[in-house]
Length: 226
Image (cartoon, rainbow, N blue to C red):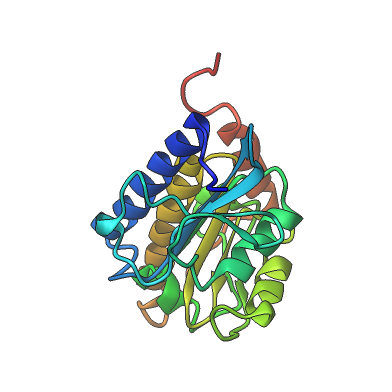
């Protein structure tokens, strides 16, 4: 029996494609690199994890190209194969039920920073968006359980991490916030790289107290929510 996604699932797929295409437009990925996932509850199919497919340019994907797996990784929707980073996405969704959206990119400055340090120090208050200094998960081959495990550890009490020699990963309750965190992380890495490239100076960092102040302040940033 052919499975058909519900209206809510189709709408979520459209939002996922928007984020994936924006990552290309903003220069955070090149070609078919990077991937996005979003967890939904479909009335007929249960819990689904929508994922971008492997090796397909985002501009070639449309409304009828929905790809979805269940939390165990069994494909329930679509004929295109899911992203090669499916083990990574599944691990994050299992670990962090509050985070429905996961965005992975190969952003240039963040990837460069991942070659230099084990964490990005708090050189700016946007570090508070990630729960603290952003850790770098040790290198492991893409698409492997080893990479998924390294990322799970790096994400402890965090909403983002870097993948050594690889890129970025952010999570959030919604796709827009996950993407915003990705863009902010790339900017933070650019700032740190720029400051660190001026010898003999060492970039100053925020104190734990200053970072905690920023965490509290950012909770009320922006327009009030209904």
